[in-house]
Amino acid sequence: MSTVRTLTYDAIVVGGGPAGATAATDLANSGLHVLLLDRAGRIKPCGGAIPPRLIRDFDIPDHLLVARANAARMIAPSDREVDMPIEGGFVGMVDREHFDEWLRERAVNAGADRIDGAFKSVDHDSDGVPVVCYQPSGAEKERIERVRGRVVIGADGARSQVAKQNIKGAERMPCVFAYHEIIRTPAQGEGGFDGRRCDVYYQGELSPDFYAWVFPHGETASVGVGSANKGFSLRGAVSKLRQSSGLAACETLRTEGAPIPLKPLGRWDNGRDVLLAGDAAGVVAPASGEGIYYAMVGGRLAADAAGAFVQTGDARELASARKTFMREHGKVFWILGIMQHFWYRSDKRRERFVTMCADPDVQHLTWQAYMNKELVRAKPGAHVRIFMKDMGHLLGLSPS
Image (cartoon, rainbow, N blue to C red; front, side, top):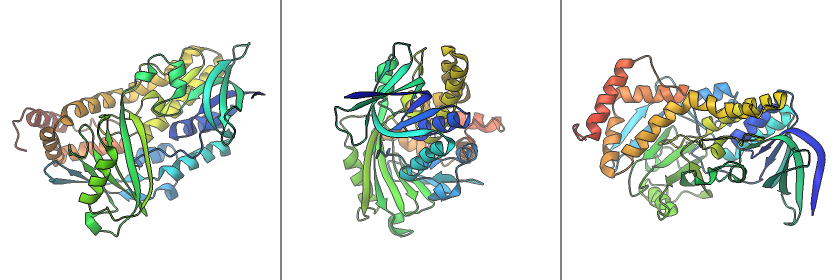
């Protein structure tokens, strides 16, 4: 059974995570008629870290921050610990279950319509207008609804069906697979836990090619791991991490797993009426796996491009989203990709990487770049020193 809504939207956004919800909000605020189609009940596994720039640029209220981390601790394969205090800043922590829903509700408050349902396909009516086919949440499998929209934004995650069906090569996007467990937070100091610090483990036994983490979320904490190695047991690694960090006895509230892309797609639009944003476009930072900020930036740029397309009818406008994103953030992604390629390949290199994190220049530039989301150019001498130290560690010329 299939029905068609006679109403034609200016834009249909598929996926209600940070990218999709941001795109829907911006489009609605610009006066366009927008539909947000989201699969209900999905929570992405995520450490939940957001930088101050995101909070400023996207007007995030304080009540959504479940914690403010003022330091990170890097743990090497040898169990050596390096603390990286944040001077004059913090890492905001959010719970994706509540953060994402707040973003969706903001889109509705801006004027977007919202439907809970599972995307099936993009077809076209006889007049060439895209038609999104979806199964409403809770409906029998044979019931498919169809709704028209002048442009479709696919923000439906790393294994995006919108991308797979409409963007050539999207199915070959490289991914890390992430798994985490949300646990009840132990008492401050219990098992070494610190509710104001993010712990990052660079140990091959916990991840052969990425890292593991313990991130504070106020009354809860995220304990997780990522790896692109399909034969590696993510659940086993998290269990091992909880045992070694004194968190095994903490109550497990929920578990989640999903692929996380680590390379932007070469094309985000089909040249006609479909555009991607967020994980669907591959905008998660290599090495760090950070995605919320980049997803919301991608959602905003997708809204700008889609809005321009709706106003002009020129499909070339859709390509501006990727062009602008890569111009502003492509160099950071390139640098982080090199870091991951070199430093995550063996425990010997991970050990040297953690040693580098003790360097004051590294710490200053790392936090400034993270909080402001741009490369720091004010201290060129520090960049030169870091490059020389980096090469020394990579070539084994510096002590570990």
